[in-house]
Amino acid sequence: MVRVGLTGGIGSGKSTAADLLARRGAVVIDADAISRSVTAAGGSAIGPISEAFGPDFITPQGALDRDRMRQASYSDTQARKRLEGIVHPLVGAESARQEADAMAAGARCIVFDIPLLVESGRWRQRVDQVLVIDCVPEVQVARVMRRSALDADTVRKIMSSQASRAERLAAADIVVANSGDSLAPLAQDIDQVATRFGL
Image 1: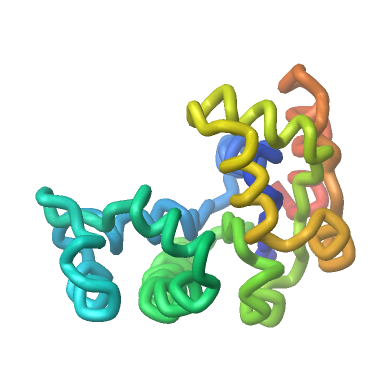
Image 2: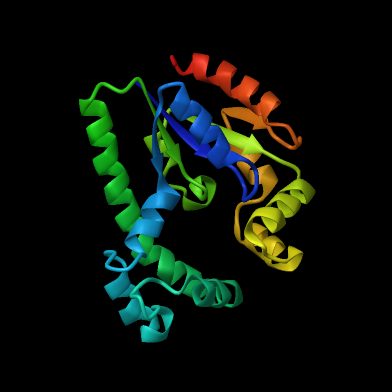
């Protein structure tokens, strides 16, 4: 069985690559989806977040106020570290549970979809290969503005809080370029990569 760490900057097409690998038979464990679930209403991170940051950071519905937290995190790196200290262990525990289920089911390839794989430092030991979806920064900005209705400055702030393109490329075992407008080249490249993973 192969464990793959999949990463890429915001707007790189990483989630699309994960979907393509899932279609080829990979089990995808999505760290972002787990993070969203633990910070949703009733999620296991809500109590600790409220204690650490105050009730203003929780919406009336009982979920993490993402906009407020985003603003706090970009103006205060310690706030981001405190949030990560709460959320990352919960994401790690749920990832391990899903990994155990996939192994028990005889999965040939488990793909850990981890936006902050390079930044966290702890994922490299857990995976056999690191697959980076690479994209030029201008295209990242344009894609995120289109899909998320964020302005260019906000997108660049998000990008500056992530590992640099050079850091991701340095951590990669496999790089797939995805700066074009068409899905076809990405799908073709992922098909080739999937074969290397036994899919």
